[in-house]
Image 1: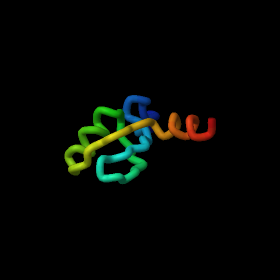
Image 2: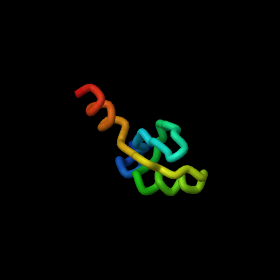
Image 3: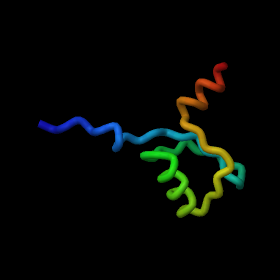
Length: 60
């Protein structure tokens, strides 16, 4: 029997706007790891927001 994944290991989808004008939907364990991954790939983040939060604000 396989154990269900803990919430600590679940990915969160983020909406990310970069300095170069790109918009990404990016999945990561948390915002800190998202920022680290994007920095490693050479992106400078202007704004980051969980996708669910962004969708709620967009529809309001």
